[in-house]
Image 1: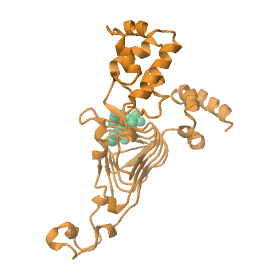
Image 2: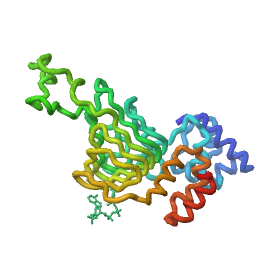
Image 3: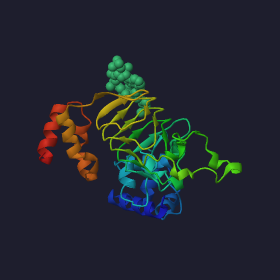
Image 4: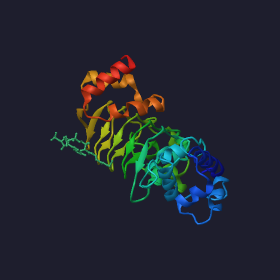
Length: 282
Ligand SMILES: CC(C)(COP(=O)(O)OP(=O)(O)OC[C@H]1O[C@@H](n2cnc3c(N)ncnc32)[C@H](O)[C@@H]1OP(=O)(O)O)[C@@H](O)C(=O)NCCC(=O)NCCS
């Protein structure tokens, strides 16, 4: 977090509210007014708890304080609960590409452990895991990448070439069946402990049931469960699915998304569809 930028932002907001440093220090419960000076000049950090307190005092949300600062990309979508995090903020592997707002929840290992759940993902295979925006990924979900696939059309499935004493005698690993990138669309919800096998495509808006083994492509806005995975039903009728795939709400400007959230998160679908058709001339 860029403390200096944050300090400046807090100073601007305090002044905008017509508060002196002394008044803010009193409201925050700081005995010493210099604490505010130190925060505003970036010398001191402000704790998450005090950030919430400050937001209350200023009658704004914590994200209104953080949002305006490019350098600050919050890891946790909800600063009070560190049980889920924006995946984009924690991945380091350039072959894992994740859209904004997609999150991973893991109370046991910590959500920052997401990358550990992308297994057998080797640079030399070159395969990518691509996840769209606004996906919800539950704890224990495993993305198995192409490096996991042993040769299966040869007489043995044993990987001789990674065993030192047999090195060079079998085909290089990269020439084994590579099913390509794993692609998860936008607004996909993947239930607890699901396993996603190499190269599958999960369509926008799909829901994957807990413990499913996703071994084949899953169509948009379907609900797919089990092992072997089976599309149980579709979330909406074809006309509505076509409308949503045309709308692509996740690609809209964030201000437009905020405007339509009351509609897309309401189960009065008829009203929402009517609004969306009129608003976007669809
Ligand atoms: C996939 C899911 C959303 C389906 O919910 P739903 O639409 O209400 O589905 P229903 O309960 O009506 O079940 C529909 C059918 O799918 C089956 N089914 C549902 N979830 C299943 C699962 N995870 N695995 C296998 N079968 C499942 C039901 O037994 C039922 O089968 P039937 O048609 O043969 O009777 C839900 O069951 C699920 O798995 N949710 C994941 C929860 C989770 O992991 N959350 C993590 C925290 S975010």
